[in-house]
Amino acid sequence: TYVVTEACIKCKYTDCVEVCPVDCFYEGENMLVIHPDECIDCGVCEPECPAEAIIPDTEGGADKWLEVNTKYASEWPNITQKIDPLPGADDCVEEEGKFEKYFS
Ligand code: SF4
Ligand code: F3S
Image 1 (cartoon, protein in one colour):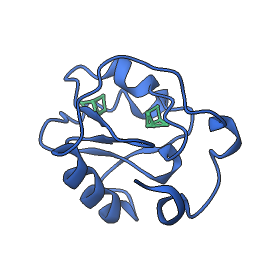
Image 2 (image 1 turned 60 degrees about the horizontal axis):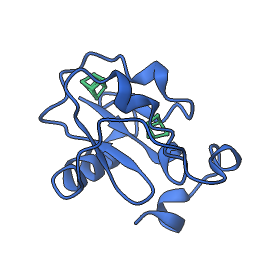
Image 3 (image 1 turned 60 degrees about the vertical axis):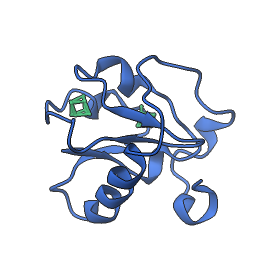
């Protein structure tokens, strides 16, 4: 599966949801996650994210994000259409520690 990581937090560009053939993105207040059981590993969302927030779960450091994606994909609503990014998204793409500071 692919997973959404920290760079998405407070940005939510949502370009990813438009290309996913199986509509497996779920929306929280300030981040999206991928449902690992629904993702078919096609990889098309990865290059679409302007924040480069999407990675395969085989990549180093992905474990924590796999947990986050798994947990919240079953709690948050499905999102299948692009929406406006969060205000100030462009200013915090590369900010570090967003999970600790803002995740909700
Ligand atoms: Fe959807 Fe493919 Fe991305 Fe998985 S890898 S979330 S199936 S676009
Ligand atoms: Fe987030 Fe990137 Fe999608 S910022 S909403 S994973 S396009």
